[in-house]
Amino acid sequence: MNTKIVCNQHIWFTVSLIYEMDINNQKITNDGSWEESILLIDALSSEDAIEKAILLGKKKEIEYSNSYNEHCQWRFIGVANCYQILDEEIGEGCEVFSRFLRPEEGKSLLTPFES
Image (cartoon, rainbow, N blue to C red; front, side):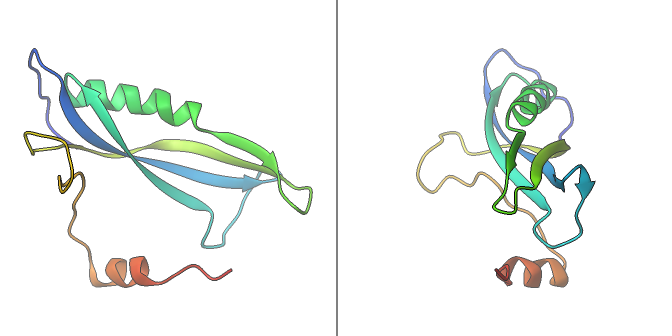
């Protein structure tokens, strides 16, 4: 995660949140049981961005019954990453997230989920 950045103006960050799915209060092991959600956060520092993201992550937890009448719950696990956006202006073409990948990660991202 970023080191502490403090100034008098707001800074844009992308924060990666991790969620895990439980069905009937049990962890599931299939490929669709985890979610990464990347949010755009306006904050004064990376610590402030993480605090905001944690609050948003907890608010976005959901519960519902699926078509098999099973209780499904997406639980917020935590913040995986926080990156400051370096572009001076936020708009079309602005890079909001980038990372280097291992070969297996790149292949995994290109492999669609089976339904």
